[in-house]
Image (tube, rainbow, N blue to C red; front, side, top):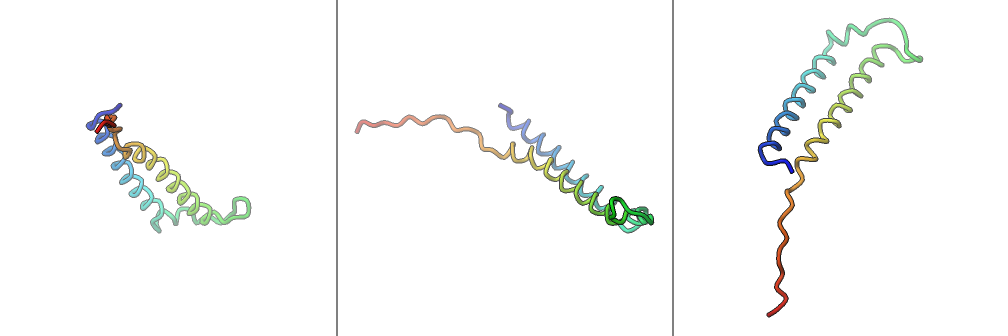
Length: 89
């Protein structure tokens, strides 16, 4: 079972990756970068800028889901030791 230092290290890494995900998502959805996708054309009938925006959006959701899994695993409380119950009065 991982000790407290290992859990803190995992949380810190996940937090840093979460900040990076937000920053990358912000940059990819900014108008200048989004303007790069302003190509006339379609992908399966969907305009390329729209496909780009929804593709980035879907990637951010998947990234957030993947980053939430380690946090969920480290938030489980440590098992408590068994308690002896005295039935005699």
